[in-house]
Length: 241
Image 1 (cartoon, one colour):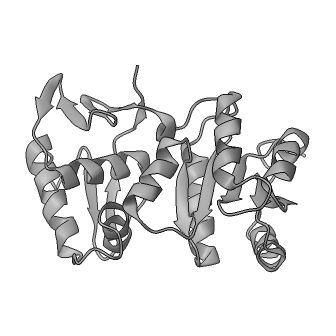
Image 2 (cartoon, rainbow, N blue to C red; image 1 turned 90 degrees about the horizontal axis):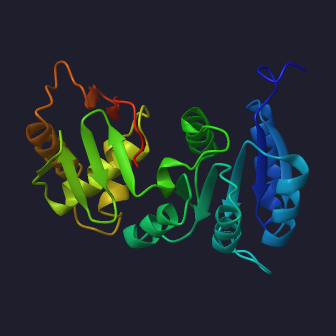
């Protein structure tokens, strides 16, 4: 089969047989080729055998958890895109997942259609054999740069003043560039579901970013509004040096 036409190869890793059986069948119906691993040790072997295009990796597993699998992959120079499935919803926990090199994360329980949407978005952003945006310290989009470790943003080489939440919002938007992000998803990513904030808080931080970036909502360079859907970061994002 022409490599351009073959289904994306997915390695699905979860110790719950009920999940892997049902989810593998669903993903195959969605057009993916699926290989299953029941724990982290098996997953590392399957990565070598099937060379997946993307790994869907549960965090809580026996023998070796998903975080350790992810660390070993990245330490060995393997940059296969990874989506972590986690039952922990705290923003700090999810930020840690990205810092360790995951390309995205999804909390359990989740809708299979949401997982498929995330998978396709990650596959669109990924470049074979190169580090993901999620593992980069510096994100660059045109004249905009974000130092994730220092929590510092610059525009045309000059530091710009942003609130803590606006920096977190900008980071999430850049990490998920060209993907439509609902207000609810942004609220969850930046504030967490347990935080008493309404979706209006998302709009406030978007307005702050646009003001500081001098980004016109009518002809956006960075942040586009999609009526009834949410927001999208439209400028190309790459790993900075």
